[in-house]
Amino acid sequence: MRTSLYVMILLLLSGSVAVGIPSSGQDPDYGKATKSGARPLRIAIVQMKSLDHDIDGNLKQATKYADEAAAQGAQFVLFPELMATGSYLSLDTWDSAEPSQGKSVLWLKSTSKRLHIWLGAGFFEASGEDFYDTFVLTAPSGDEAGRVRKQIPAGPEGYFFRGDVGPHVISTPIGKIGVGICAENYYCFAASQFLKDSADFIVMPHSSPDMSNGGGLPSPPGTRIASWYAKKLGVPVAMVNKVGRSYKPPPNEINGVFPGRSAIVDSDGTILQSMDDQEGIGIANITLDSGRKTRAGQVCTGVGIAELTIGGSEGAAAVADEYARAKNSYESNPVRKTKALSISGKP
Image (cartoon, rainbow, N blue to C red):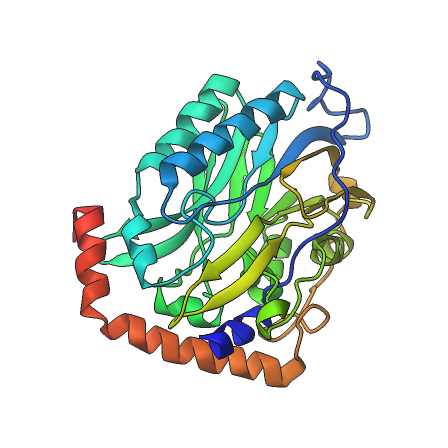
């Protein structure tokens, strides 16, 4: 498992330094277009711990953060990948999966409506006989605006859920929102789709551990990936990661820590938030300005993004090999099918 996790971390990059919350209250002109066509949006990233198998407890904690962010004038609040589910993936994670319209989605809808904000978070979804790593966005009306499933599981993640090819840009009244879930931000398909679909801003929910204590690799700051996308596309980027220990005892040992280091980078490349390793909220006013979009012919080629990937071609090949083995195991696992069906309630 250590080797598998080491391979996985080759593509799991995240993080950043120092929390600051701007003045409270919301300017009534936030969100209105200027004469140049630029529109401000007040966005919050929530860096929090997620306890394994404690969906109710995690959602209760998330409610406090959502309330706090809204009180600070946030119009859009972003939570990490698998926020409600926990911190590690293992076979017993299947027991914490939810149906497509389970507790997490109902919480997102009700909280969005109560606070009149946009809200995005990830959960572990059971649909039919499969499991998915799913991000859901809800609107201030309380309706689901869209959902994105992780397309390429990171190495050994493939043992636990299916990758799902689908759109990674959600069209909303506030703009086209590109969604990259953790490691898939380091694949060219995501960046290329954001460019092709002319995303107005990008959100990157992560659940990316620093595994250096267990013989793996450290997790770089979130400013690294957020700045790369902002420069290449000319749009704002919000990256959020978890904090806290990631531990599972032998035989499937996991020994790491979620370092936080979340970030918000504006469309002109300005770093607006660079958080540390503590729980908290980062808030900033991003600028949605189509005039800043690069409209490049392409931003990357091949499978992975060379400037971001750790380990070079050898590391990329190792990740692909691990994922192939994991995918085969997942496909043939009868327990997976039975558990998914028992939760989803439908074939």
